[in-house]
Image 1 (tube, rainbow, N blue to C red):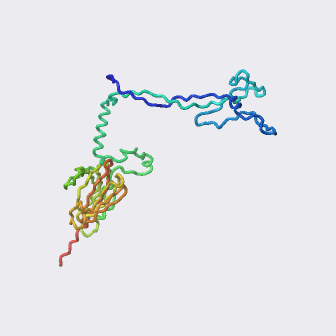
Image 2 (cartoon, rainbow, N blue to C red; image 1 turned 30 degrees about the vertical axis):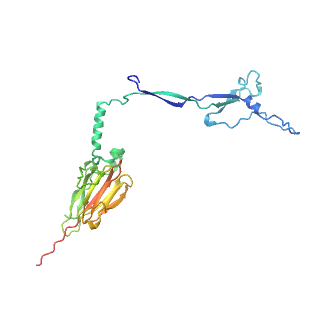
Length: 327
C-alpha cells in the first residue's frame, strides 16, 4: 500500500430494512367466495379481509388511514360514509429480506498511539509494584476498599497494629502486636538450595513473615510459633526442606485448581528428599497441608499462568524441662 496507508479490508453488515406494501384488496381477492358453489345450500361468509398472522419480530404491521381521505385503494374506492374520519386498515407493510452491504475499513500502519510522558511514568510505577505483590493489599488490585466512615462514627476502630492484652508469661497487661498488614510485610526471595530435575528451571518464590512469637520459658507449656505467607509464580518451586522438631501447617489461598503440588519425603529417607519416592498431592484453593516434626517437604506450582499464594504457620517445640539436681 502507499506510504502512510494500511491494508484495506471489508466487512459485511446489515443495511436498512425495506418494506413492501400490500393493499387490503389483494387479501380480499384471495379470500373464499361469499357462497360455496359446490353446495346446494348457500353459506354466509364474512366480507372482511382475512390476514395471516403478522411477523411482529420483523416489524410486519398493519397500515391505518383515515376513512374519509384514504387513497390506498385507488380512485374507485367506495368510502363508507357511516365511518366518518375513523381510522381503517388499508393494507399491510411486509418486510423484505434483510439487505447486506460491505463497509470498507483501512487498517492504519503504526496504529499504536504514542504515550504521553505522564502515562509512561504511571505504567512504569505500576510495573514496579507488580514485581512485589506481597507488599500490596489484595483489595488494591481487585476491588474498591469499603467505606468505613459510618463504622467509625459508632465504633472505636484502631489504625495501628497493637492492642492491650494479658500476657500469661509475665502475668501483666501489655501492648503487643496483634495485626500484621500485608502492606507492611517485607518479602524475601527463596533460595535455590538443590539441583533440580530437567525441565523444572530455577524459578523460586517469595516469602514474608507476619509473626514470630518465641516459646515461653521451660515449664509453662506455651509453644512459640511463626506465621507468614508464601507466593510461588507460575512454575515456581520451593526446594525440599526439613522442619526439624517443628510442626508446619499450610493453607492454600489462591492457585489454579489442582495445580499446587505438596509432597513429603518417604520416612525411610531420614530427612533426605528423594523425588523418585516422594509422596505427592495436588491441592486447590481452600485446602490444607501439614508437615509433622522430623519430615521433609517440597512445594511446586505446576500452573503456567496463575500465581500460587499460601499461608503457613510453624509451631515450635516446647523447651525441655531441666531435671532438678538432687538436694
